[in-house]
Length: 481
Image (cartoon, rainbow, N blue to C red; front, side, top):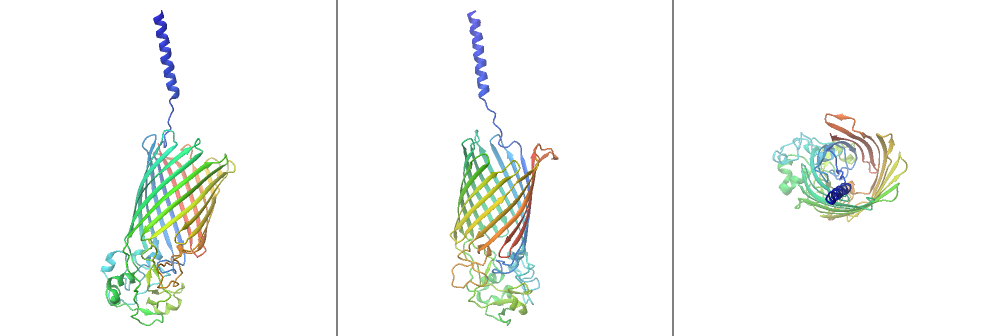
């Protein structure tokens, strides 16, 4: 009898232990339940009157079409691998004028690669160009291809997340390879978040120079009688034939690399049921060839020389100029190091179940003399469970770089100079709206994919220097089932 009682007590203890173990076992939710696929598309179109390729004047017409496919794959409960593959194609009136001369003249049709310089037209007649129109050269269009791979791991309690990424992109004259990583810690029942991220990009230029300066680098002071410009007439400011053009300030770049390093520290805190705040500070360093090799500069203390039709010289700086292009004195020269420090904050206010106010402010400063302020607000408004609309507004203002001056305002004795209006003093406004559709139950399907959400955005951008742009973007996210 005592043995039977002992066995019963033992069984009860075993069951109790098993029940205790079962109650302490917790279910670990996967970081990502299913593979997600994002299809992203954007269309960008701009216009302006300050082409950096033409030394600060001329058409800035540009269109860019870009598409990306982002695939996030859960490897297990804790790990996610994400691939972002993108390609964009652009046409640019400004870039086309790296070689501005028409197909019947010196350029023989133009082009960006070395074949252009090995297939030179001779005894050309009446070549011309204008900074206010796109040339027929191949440099007016290009494609950019990129790929980014990111691996992230979350701890069992989901309070620690680390990630690493590698990237690669390439276009005709530029290649970029990058790598980086980050660490995120959550505290206080996930109400507090601290993040650290670092990145490095090791880039390489394949410099393209304006046509006239490229030929000068090949043939020196006798370049007007050889190669590309053989038989081409050069005019002075009065429209007379001249042999005086000699861009002695120009030399090709010795350095072709551009390396960028960045570190970002962020802090996010839920302050109340209605307010969430985050702050961030970034430190960025760039070194190497930071100027753009094909952007012309014209000096106020040098004589002017042209190729084209003499009658347009008096109206060169206006859109009435239909057929003459001024030859460059040099290309932009900038320091080979740059430090940037942006500091910003985001504050989100939950107004009610239908409206949230998302605000953003950033202060920026660098050692090139630029200081800038950015402020924006977005107001997501819920229209039922599936639709959200969000009007938005952004304001930006900056001071000029120490090295900027407008068209023909630099002098040849300066060490650094640029007429790129991105480095000028300006302010800009951006207005827009978005519409988002969220299918909570994934009821809509395309083949084996469930539609999760569709996001559409439109923005209009306007700068006080005359540049305007329109941006349309569309994103569609699917989940495999």
